[in-house]
Length: 279
Image (cartoon, rainbow, N blue to C red):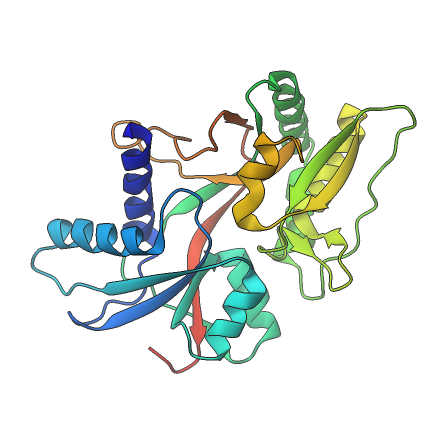
């Protein structure tokens, strides 16, 4: 129960500092699309955020949010086009990817300071040696410039579809199963024909070459990642942590139960996307 309420506080801080939508008059409503959250319902998130914001900003207009969860990014984009939601919450790299490919999309001006989240991997707590291998590999890729190069290729300079990635194979080496969702292009990206590509896959390829193990990529729904990890359907999932002050909420408290997270390999700001001219 203690962790549950701490998770609520994390969600409120995320939304108040980076996922809020434009400032609107009291009584109006923003229907905000999100990929399914694992530890909180839509209704509880609505009520809690409204309560926290009202207490924190008693003399200002109160944005009313109706959070609507989606199993994948494609259904969320379809809902935005159909007018079923007003905005969708994602990250700046993903927003730029989507806007480049759709002339009807634009960024929403956030009414509060933005927050930067850290991207990492999560493994089962029992797999501490695997975490250490990932930590050491990520540090090496940072130091030798590989991470900066991959970031430039797949995110900063990315105008076409993310290029295919060759995953190395080592005869007789162990195989590590890694979950991908395709919900954060060009980071977590799956091509139209079902092949994982993009930045995260390129990162895994580089890590594989360092640790000498084979990586098998398994596509799972975003909301099913922790279940896939705990059931040993996969050994690694991609995760995002909120680097908050320890005096407010302990860092990484939002990690999956019975899991440990690696060193971060990328940071990005929360961003909202809407249809041009609306809102």
